[in-house]
Image (cartoon, rainbow, N blue to C red; front, side):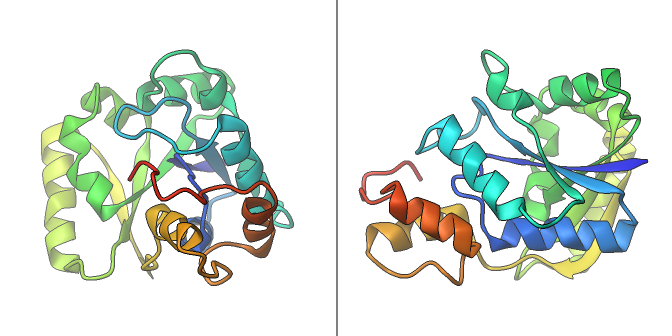
Length: 202
């Protein structure tokens, strides 16, 4: 059984995240994709509570039995690091792990804590960002394989031009977000009055 892993602050989760997950399921024949909202990520400060981010992820994944949600990173005290999550999943019996990342995240891989260890624990599926050069990303993959032993596969599906910051900005400006997030997530944001302040963390 091959498990795909899609981590992120999901602040909020949006349609781009779901496109990545579905592309990985189809192109890599994954059995499941596990969505992992970050607890206390080292590079970002979430704008809303852990409970809100978890609930929005749950709402976004309803109706897709191959999408799973875990709060394991939200429950972990202190900073959350990928290596710790991968080790925890292995102790739970998950041995074939594929971490889903954007090409921008792959470029940052050398800055990751214990990058070499992460490379031994999982493979990666890489999603191109709009405007990326496929050949350049392929060269980056080769470099990560040479330098860290990181095996990766470049998906043919292109990522969407959607970001969580775009969603937050649209909400703060009173603009519709139905084209950016699943309908249940848009409804949750409205009902709980999330992201209405323009003074959010970018």
